[in-house]
Amino acid sequence: MGALLSLPLMAVPSMATLLSFGASCCGAATCSMVCSACGKCGNSVATRIAYALILLVNSIVAWIMLTPWAIEKLQHLMLDYVKINCPNGECYGWLAVHRINFALGIFHLILAGLLFGVASSKEPRAAIQNGYWGPKVIVWVAFVVMSFLIPDEFFMFWGNYIALIGAMLFLLLGLILLVDLAHGWAEYCLAQIEDTDSKLWRTVLIGSTLGMYAASLAMTIVQYIFFAGPSCSMNQAVITINLLFWIIISVISVNPTIQEHNPKAAR
Image 1: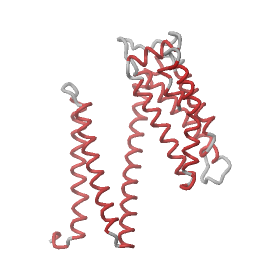
Image 2 (image 1 turned 30 degrees about the vertical axis):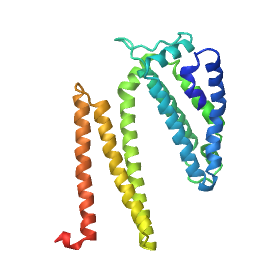
Image 3 (image 1 turned 120 degrees about the vertical axis):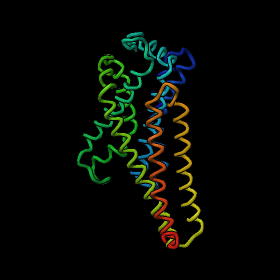
Image 4 (image 1 turned 135 degrees about the vertical axis):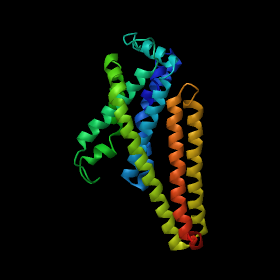
């Protein structure tokens, strides 16, 4: 993990280079530390946290690669063997982002193939999923490095066609998981309220619900600010449609709750 974060800094001489190598030595230890620290919450939870950290680091590095500075450092690191350009001029980190995400996708596809048919953490192959963090991080970083040796033409096709389909499926899956998480949390809070009749759990349920609404509204405003400029009519339309759906679904979901707790409102 540290090695991946240090890629843009590897071309900086002396102390920065030494710090980069030091960070790479600590990368594998980070995942192991997370899993050992979460020993009480079970292997599955610790493993999810570790993979979430990998995704977070991958996203941060991809974001850094969008800057011209990072691309210049990267090209210098690779002795100018790889020129990250588009046919119509420099596209900075567009291809670098696809390379980094492609490497992570291949990494998870290989893990999926190795773990196909595993249904329990007690099976021997489950150790591949819940352990071996050092080798897995090294393999992941190696895939990132090798992805920069693939010609640009492949990633132009990949980014314009394959990645769009994958991104759509990823967003749909993430949306389903978020909805399931919110539903599971609400059910758990309601069960605690019914069992203990505690005002604390009522406050937690109401507070978390309002927090989710506030976070959704805040992120929508951020999207308007950063992704819906005057010339981005498509982005404006998509964000607005999403906002309208959010309002409609919120109204539909709130009305049955009000009628359930206030029978007079139903009349």
